[in-house]
Figure 1 (cartoon, rainbow, N blue to C red):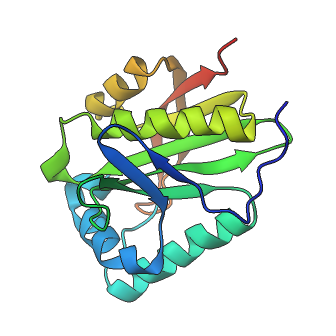
Figure 2 (figure 1 turned 90 degrees about the horizontal axis):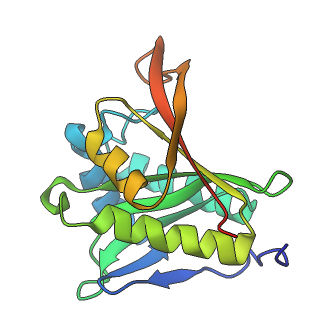
Length: 185
């Protein structure tokens, strides 16, 4: 198993087209625009931020989770525009004692269908395997999101089944599909 990651450092990931840096306060306007799009946020568990202050609070929550060593949430930006925010991708929960992590991602609607989600998530998965020693990644997808299911399938995730879970934002319950990817040998 890998040595524990030093959560006092702020990892930056780069791919051929993208730069992923942990979300910071200056990303609040971009995050507000991203999550303010109902087509992006409609499958989330929590309500989207409605004001800049709420977006800043959400980023502060992500920062606290990072500082506690239980999550990392990156801004997705194109390498030719590192200040811009075209999406987010992250290890939403990290359990070092079980070596399991849950991942999630969002991409702004103008950037859909360009492969950014898979490229960003691929970088996060590689980083998690290499630096956290993740043994199993999980992702939960709404059944009405076939594009996200294709992203996960291309990265090697397997569908394990469906599960019912509470829908915090909208109340009631909802069904999600559980995908998993285990550490390559």
